[in-house]
Image 1 (cartoon, rainbow over the protein chains, first blue to last red):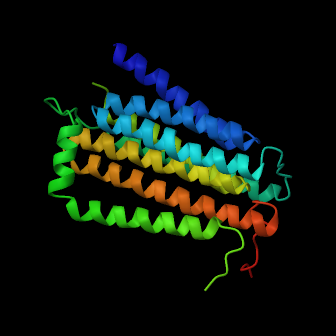
Image 2 (image 1 turned 90 degrees about the horizontal axis):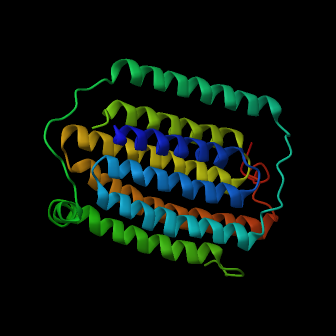
Length: 166
Length: 100
């Protein structure tokens, strides 16, 4: 029973802070709410018996990616930027379309995606994930490292000021 | 154990919030954060199905999605910094050079 209480508590935290992310006008508040939402999602990962990915979620997402977002927001001094409502019709259509999309999605999942619970424990700890990663997924793993290198070079090149493009 | 369906519903709600943010906001960084929200909703779906079917592939895929999201965030934020240096704003309506 305590499992259900934890699920509902952190699910509501995740949803509420996700709403704050898209509704608040100050980007700093949005970024910090997104961090809170990611922490709640890490609790969900623990409930799904994947503690390694929960730790990764906190370290990589909440720790690294969101700090990058905060750095950029503060570097560009965006706290004061206002969004004037210049396109009310398009904005209304956006709210309407996404609400219809969400209602349809939740309806069909609730109606058709009922599944019997799996039997037996399934614990995906760091050891299991590591063995799979370095045995059957070694090629994608190396490709991801090359991709990260390309991203570092691209980010440096794009954000540097006064670079003469070749 | 909590049914898989509930995790799917939570994931659908978070994904919808992300879609709503992308469609309605014009601040580039907020749009980017909405995209991160959608990526995380999909990660939750992957993990829910990984537990449902006792498969490790879902977990590995979440690992790769996190790495690619990090790369995407770095390059995307660099693009916004560059845009800010040129236009003094990150309102995506102002970046209309290639719009017909």
